Every structure is written in structure tokens, then in C-alpha cells.
Amino acid sequence: MKTFVVLMGAPGAGKGTQAKKLEASLGLPQVATGDLFRANLKNETELGKLARTYMDKGELVPDEVTVAMVRDRLSQPDCVHGAILDGFPRTTAQAKALDELLNEFSAKIAIVPFIDVSQDVLVERLAKRAEIEGRADDNEETIRVRMEVYQSETAPLLAYYDEKGLLVKINGEQSIHQVTEDLTEVVQEVM
Ligand code: ADP
Image (cartoon, rainbow, N blue to C red; front, side, top):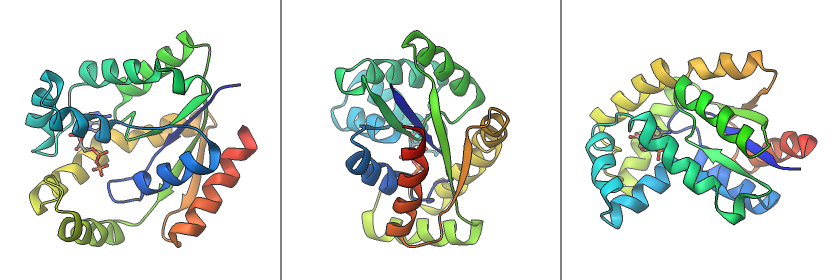
């Protein structure tokens, strides 16, 4: 059986941190579109040059480009048993494309954990991360844009997955360890 997990949560909710922990505890690879784009940026690929123009502003990279990249990644041999998707899908079009893609692989989404964190805590965390990591898109203006894009483009996906009976809410304001425990438990139930 293949297990595809879609991790949802606002920027700063802890998706990346938790996806890495789940990768270790569940033995499924983390597929993070933000990381894939950043690797392309670093290697100065054509894809990276294109993605940069959007990422620097906090905007979304166009769906066709993102979907093609994910298709490529999920076709790699390490994804035969599934993957933990982090940062994808981010739009309704991407969610539909993912359904089709998984259909081609004779697979489907097993569960969609939503790491729930209040707006105040998110803003606080992102500001702190900006200070520590100095990620180029963690400045005040870009954070604001990313939050807005999340609200308008990505948050509607919560209802999309809830209607399919796949959404499970996880309290993201607990300790990192406790969040990992809760996530591992709900995913293991569907594996
Ligand atoms: P965050 O911590 O804000 O969730 P990510 O590392 O997931 O950030 O993504 C950083 C940037 O990469 C986004 O602001 C966007 O420009 C681009 N990106 C990542 N995933 C996607 C996606 N699924 N669709 C379009 N653009 C994306």
C-alpha cells in the first residue's frame, strides 16, 4: 500500500520541521516544494531562475511549473511507497492535479493533517525565524504577502479535504515533540 500524506498549515505552522520528523518515524520521504525550488535556485537551473521571481515576492510559482516539478519528484523510486507532501498543494488547481497524478500511480491521499496555529503565534514565529535563519523570503513584507496568499489560495483547501473526509486537525501550539507524536499516531492509523 502507498501512503501519501498531505501536511497542511500556514507559513510558520511547523510543516517543514514535522515533515522531517515524520520522514524519520514513518520511513516515507518528505517532498517539500519550497525545498525543491530552493535547490533549483542554488543550482541556478532555468526552473530556479523562474521560481526566484515569484519566491522573492512571496507569491506562488505558477501551477503548471510546480505540478511538473512534483510529478517528476513523485516519479522517483524512493516514492514508491508514498511520501509526505509539505507545501503542496497550495491551490485548488494543484489539489486537483495531485488527485490526477496519484490516480496515475494507482494511489490516493491517505490523510491530510492540518497543523493548526493561531495567527498571533504564526507572526511571532516567522519574525523569529527571519532573525535566526535569515531566509531571503522571511522579511516583513514577504511574510505579509505569504500570509495573504495562504488565506486566499491555500486555506480553501481545508474545506476541500474536509469534504473528502481526509482532514485531521492537530494542535500546532504544543511542543514540537508532542506535535510529532500526535501526527505519527494519526498517520499510522491509516498506513
Ligand atoms: P513557507 O515557509 O512560507 O510555507 P515554503 O518553503 O514552503 O514556505 O515556500 C517558499 C516559497 O516557494 C513560496 O512562498 C512560493 O513562492 C514557493 N512555493 C513553494 N511551494 C509552492 C507551491 N506548491 N506552489 C507555488 N509556489 C510554491
